[in-house]
Length: 268
Image (cartoon, rainbow, N blue to C red):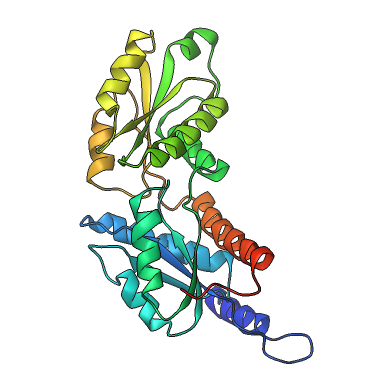
């Protein structure tokens, strides 16, 4: 019954008050990196369903940079000359956001815009906080406990310095939310490592250290970082409701920017 109601609402939403059919909005293409871990693909599919539930009538597609199908070029080819906003399921700027995705978009016939990566943004901090609480983080601490507590924000890592800037901003926002130090650390390609960050915090008297998983889905890096936690390790961001809201926010933000800077979506 819920599915029928949603489909009916979608069809009605495509009709204006004068009975004419409204033009279909640009498709939202969620661009995932791709992974050999089947949990990652399952997480992405669930996230897409949550986006569709929040925005009935919006065409939502999936495209991968590598490793999984459909690959982004194939998804874009299926759109023909239609319009689309590509929303990277990535948490910071880096090579994929700056080069891979724009180059794939430019090679397609579709009229596209590439939205900003998901991070940094307060909705990510909301999700990180929720995952830490689920793992056992206390929302209320006495002063002694707070002085001994800290968080390592474990991210994938990138050689692009702007990626580290973005991750650092998220760490700063999370620290303000929690009231304890939050150090960014990386699984690869950047420093410090999670182990190094944990030792640095211990040297400052912070021996009650949690690891916040700054990954969109379970996978090898997320597992390795969690295993390094001396206390608790939070689950990846996953399909938390704030993630679906953030995907739609980046989509809307990209369209709003297009409306103020040019009359239509740029042709890739």
